[in-house]
Image (cartoon, rainbow, N blue to C red; front, side, top):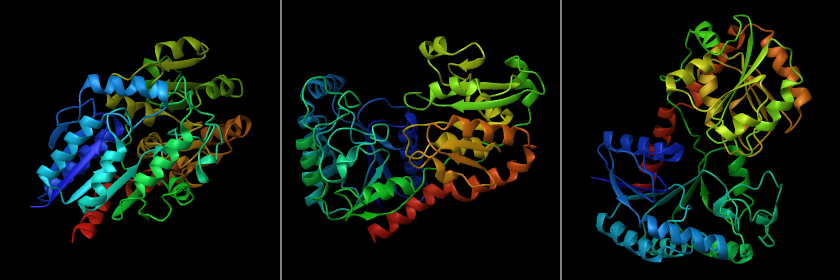
Length: 404
């Protein structure tokens, strides 16, 4: 029986943790043995779970990281214990997800992987793997990672460092560690990210693009727009411009405030996922929802919306775009990272980052059209290219090619 081990900051919790859980379930259904090693936050899993380290270790790791900018260089004991666990279960495939998050020592892990001689798959959900500090650099338009990080302009960003800048040292340590594993396959989750990797020190590693996928059977058009509008006191003929984020940091929350001034009064902006603090900052003309009562209500909002607007300033490949399309709703998004890759002229439009005048014009054009004009094309595109099952099939096909 072939064995799969995935390593991630969470287990069946959050977007990346749920992706790992789905992969594990698919492997189990095909007769594999599935294990997930995680740092913190978990939900019950069908895979066998291994908790790396302790909360005390993560706290110490976090404190030292904030002082010395040495994220990923602590947790030595926890990582050595993980190595023993890997040797014990002896997996055929090791699949890394987010290995940052104050719970792993990456030099120790990669020193082991370089000699373990088993295929390693690494899904990149952000850019941390090839920078000297940050997980995202788009907002600052920083290109130092292409040649060698130094004097980092994003020390205040995750993983935050209050005191020292060791971005140059971190860059060289990552380059040495991550280049040491010969049988490493990098999985960028968007074409944009793949192109970024091609200009990094990981450029010579094998790359296979696998988009994140969603459950298209679950996210499907709901026919209850009038009910949704009544709940939020929106007139029957009102137009809904929807925005959704689990965390609105650099996802364009302020842009919606400016957009409100450019749209007619019968256009209603509805934002899901805002914090209580964010909600207080929003003008009364914007409907802020801290959280939906359940995922079915989110589906109803996606389905009731005339257009989904995603003015994200930093993103690799947002799944909220896929959820909206799967519910039959066209999208307007900024040309940010891989956000545009889910969009075609039949399913929405892409505008330059921050161009709210163009955004408002396109949003009005879409809202003045019949939604059914877009609904079929939106749905078909997601089912064809971005379903969860397609993602899982791609991973299993890759595993099989590596473990023969």
